[in-house]
Length: 425
Ligand code: IMP
Image (tube, rainbow, N blue to C red):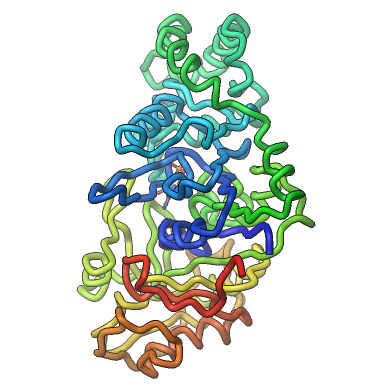
């Protein structure tokens, strides 16, 4: 087993941080392949908690080389702050973290435009306002600025001029003004100087590692239902969050990937706008939010909570080619009298067990009630030891998706985990 993709199967925040952390213990290379500072992982360094948005969580494993792939959009100021915070806490970053020379930069005008657009929009997306959408827009419009461009700041100046020219009419229509190229470059030049030694052909580094049979972990960001192609469009992010995004976003061929692990919570959450048919707006929803600590690590926003959506998981299993599940936060459901799971949808065209991704807003979930359990499960380390009603939730996921569980997480700590299939063995 060499290259494993870890991908979120819901709307992000599935608890990837813990699973990536567990798996990266045996990984020699950890690569992030999509998204930007809209993601957030809480790392525990010694006794301190640190939220990183860009640096792969594998950075805490001293053996791992960490790569930030060309599928990412990177705010250089945010990245440098993270690197300095890690170094301050004794984590070695230099010579271990490399940024793809093809990765695109998020610059101050992207952040400005993201915020202005969210304020002006009649149909808000509820973005993280970190400049993600405008950054990717510039990339596909072929006027983006890549890390390789920073090697020649005169060239970068011309590229920024061109990008500002393209955005100016929109920004002026909103009654706002753009920063000048000089101001942007004044801030960018010192960041470029510090980051350029870490800029590399990360695809080649990855290829060398794969050829040498090293354990490689390809870490997704956000989740399947936020993917720009496969998610609940337009309420999505602007990148390829699905497992296929690992190929383009990290620069690895599909034939080199050995396993895709899908992460799902035992319930569902969503941040921002967009349909969420299994949403709970009652006190059970509040209970899940409080017990599950469901508040955004980037924006602090309370997450919307709801019951597990099995058609969504079957859809995620299909579009990602999921081989095994990592089911997280099963313990959060302990104490509920009844655990509901969405098993089908009533759509305008009739009842279906498929996930109605384009008609989600006009479809009604069909629930099945499973009996709850009251026994604490945090100390359980074998699937067979779970209370039978907790095991039923795991079985429901396995049966409805046709995919078995690799990992079941029963608490936030690293050891509070049932390992069914040790990923790199
Ligand atoms: P953007 O990625 O900031 O453009 O936001 C687009 C949508 O994706 C919004 O609904 C965000 O709340 C959501 N989103 C982006 N990143 C994450 C994440 O890491 N977890 C959960 N939701 C996210």
